[in-house]
Each structure stands twice: as structure tokens, then as C-alpha cells.
Image 1: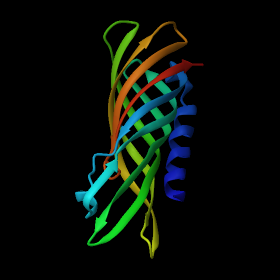
Image 2: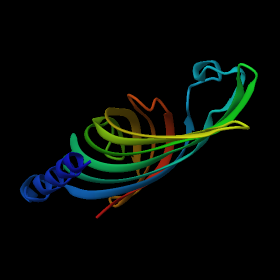
Image 3: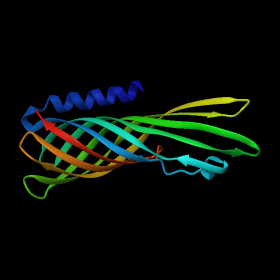
Image 4: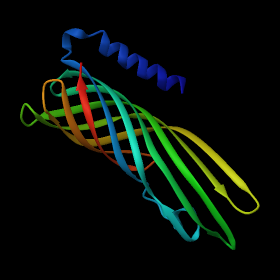
Amino acid sequence: MKKTLTSIIAVAALAASAPSFAQSWYSSVGIGYGDANFSGNDLGLSNGTVDNTDTTYSLRLGYEVNKYFAIEIGYADLGKYSFSGFAGTTQVTGSAKANSFDVSLVGMYPFTPEFQGYARLGIARSERKANANTSLLTGNQNVTETEATYGLGARYWFSKTWGMYGEWSKNDEIKVDNYSLGVTFKF
């Protein structure tokens, strides 16, 4: 965790120390739809059901180096997903949730002055928390890991200071497809 935070601070300091290259700082906030992409069978449960969709949230701070390249740090709450089924004859219920901090490099292409497409590739520090319950036992598991994160999106600028975006993103290990819409503000 300390190594990841040190990397985030180093990237932010590097970006802040190079103002001659900067176009602008920006921040984004988004809300989305997460799809966990797993079934009861994936969990080893017979007759298993999974509520594998939930609302997701994201916050990002970015530094636009030029019109083709930016550096971002971000946080995403990737949702909470419940499951139930049987392990043998024992009924099992539970839930899992995930969140992620990341540093990403963003390649952008301006199709017009107002409309741009972009792709992101970065490294994330993610946490998954899960619990499972039976009539006799309750188990909890917290896993924190470093993983790749990536995404594709498009943004439309309504003015020089604000725009809206749509994005698909995913982390290698968490495997939640995150589809989000949000607002970006330049400052």
C-alpha cells in the first residue's frame, strides 16, 4: 500500500513540476453500472444465484499534458454483489464488494474540438471484501492486490471548462465491467 501511495504522489509531483507542458488540470465524477461477471457455479455453489449488477461510483483527478496525453489518479467503488446457493446440502449466502485506487496514463484523440475518444491503461491497488454465511459458520475474506486497469471512453466538451463522458473500464483481477457516465471539470 505504501509503495502504491508513493507512486501516486510521485506521478502527481512530476505532473505539478512541469507546468510548461500543461494544458490544464481536471476532475471527474461518475456513476455507473457494474457487472461482476460470475455465477453461482463459479463460486462452487449448486443451484446458485448471483445478483451480479450494482451501482458504481468513480472520482478522478487528471493533468492534461497536451491534447493527446494525460495522467490521472482515481478512486472507484465497484459495487456490492450478493450470492446464495448450496454447498452440498448446506445453504450458503453472502456478498462481495470491491474498490480500487489507480494511476493511469490516458491517450486521447480529438475527433473535433468538442469531441474526443480516449483509452486508459494503468496500475490499480484494489481491495475485495467477501463474506459467506451458513447456519453454523460465518466467514470473511479481505484481499488487497496490485493489478492492471484499463478502459475506453468518449468525452464531449460543452464549453472549455466542462464536459460529459461515457466509459467502460475493468481491472485485471476484480473483473467487474464498469460502465459509467459522468461530468468532467477543467480548472
